[in-house]
Structure formats: structure tokens, C-alpha cells
Length: 289
Image (cartoon, rainbow, N blue to C red):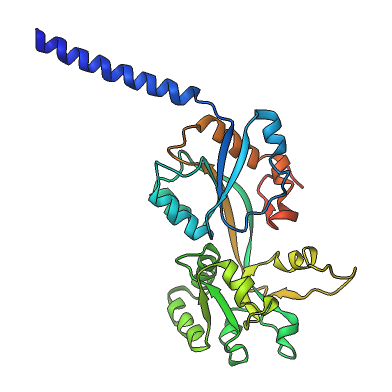
């Protein structure tokens, strides 16, 4: 009988602890949420003012490198995350995030855009800009292309998948041709675009970037370009791969209810309307023109 009472008492204690933990997680409140994002996440400073006004919660942004690096870090801390919400896991990395159980539930689609080879018009001089993936292995462009490492960069992985889509099982042969044509491989988009690309003092006039990078160059130029100035960069239109990005609540966040409110805000019309002119991607919300 005594053993029965002990076992029953232990069972009740475990049940009590479970109920208390469950109630605690359901009713936990916070005045701050941490949004983890890739380094090029640059919304306006006022982007979360409406969310804070509505909920009383301040959003702190923690940058975690390129998207590939961000997902790798989150995989190591899965279930014990360094933040509450993650922005920017894309369709090239979503399976890795799913396998690592990074998210508490299915993430939400928040934006899309195209990864494409960009070219520096002035740096090419009299050389005709490339149009296709086949063009990139021509001797005309030897030593001109910089790409991101697909193991560490979502942009690089998107470009790799573009070559797989184009060449099927022969994609390794295509990459051997790129290597023979002196392609440069770097770890991140920031390094490729702002260090290796000729537009910013590097020696590579071709770079894997985005279809929206050329207009961003014109809008954010410092000093500004004169009104009506011609574009300084262009896109090799037949090298593109569509990238879809997601946001979701991180598994293990103490504040899942409030974190989901933030995800809903990120997918809502206020934040979505900011995307074209701040992140230069297209909003996933179809109600946002």
C-alpha cells in the first residue's frame, strides 16, 4: 500500500509540474521579442512601430550572417533558440530547417524574388554582358565571375540549383567549366557583392545577386545619381532562380503566443508594403499591391 501511495504521489507530482509548466508557457508575457535575420535584413527603423503600439512589445533584431550561416547556427541551438522568430529561411534551406526542427510550427511565406547574375556595365567596357548560364563559361568572361559558396550562402545555393535545373545530371560538368574559367567562390553575398564585385572596388564584374539589385543601386547611391541617370548594373536574365523566404516561431521560444503575433505582423499588410523599397523583394501577401 505504501509503495502504491508513493507511486501515486510521484505521478501526481509529475502531472502537477506538467500542468504548471503548460500554464506558464501559455500565459508567459514579455515586453521584448528577438527577431533573428540575415545580415542584409534592413527594414526602415520605424517598421515595427505599429506592432509595438498594438501589442506593447518591442522587437529587437539580431543579425546572424548570411541565411545559410543563420540556419546552421539555429540548427545547433534548435529547441533552445537565441531568439523568438526567424526571418529569411528560403526555399533552398527550408528542408534543412525542417530536419533540424528549428520552427515550432510550419513557417509562413513572407516574400519572393529572383537570384540572378548581375554585371557591372562600366567594368565590362566593350564586352557584351552575358545573358545565359552557358555564356558564363565562355572565355570572354574568364576570371570575371564571383559566386557564393552554396554550403554557407542561400544566394549561392540558389545559383547552384539554377545550374542543376538547367543542366540536370550534367551540372557537375558545368561547374568544372566554371572552375576552368576561373570562377571565384566566397562565403557570403556581402563578401561577393561588397568586396569582390567591381562596383565596390573588387576585380569581378559579374556577381551572383538579385534581379532587384540594379534598382537598389540607383535608389541607395551615395552620392545620389542625377535624375534620369542610366543604370550602372544589369541582370543576365536567363540565369535566374526564384527564391521564396519564410518567417516562423522558433521552437523553444518562451513566448510562442507573442512570437506568432510577430510572424502574423511580418506577413501582414503594414510590414509587407515596406518590402519592395527596403529589402527589394516582392511581398508574399497578395493583398499588398
